[in-house]
Length: 139
Image 1 (cartoon, rainbow, N blue to C red):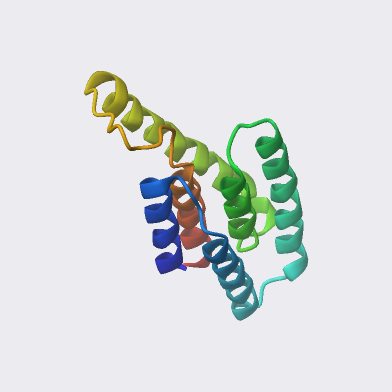
Image 2: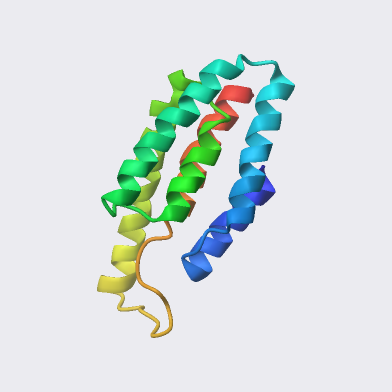
């Protein structure tokens, strides 16, 4: 899961795209993780549905892109419903730190390459927030 998450982050940072294949691999990894630990699948599926609805609203209100919505949903299967709020809180904190970094980079340091697509690679914040929560849950 760490390798796939890292590949998602690298792709999002370099091209502002999140590969559907990598998201599908993360969903599969999440499913295998839940089954291997013997957790109750119903709570995890409920978390997936709730997160999907949140992601859908975020996508349609243009808060974030489709890849980010799919990534949130794929990661959410690995956690029970009771921990989704913790993961989303850590995603928000990670996203805030990411925003400050890019604000400094683009506005204060004027390091805006002409060929780079502007915006935040929010897949990095999503991966960080969910991965920390997943590690704390399973370790």
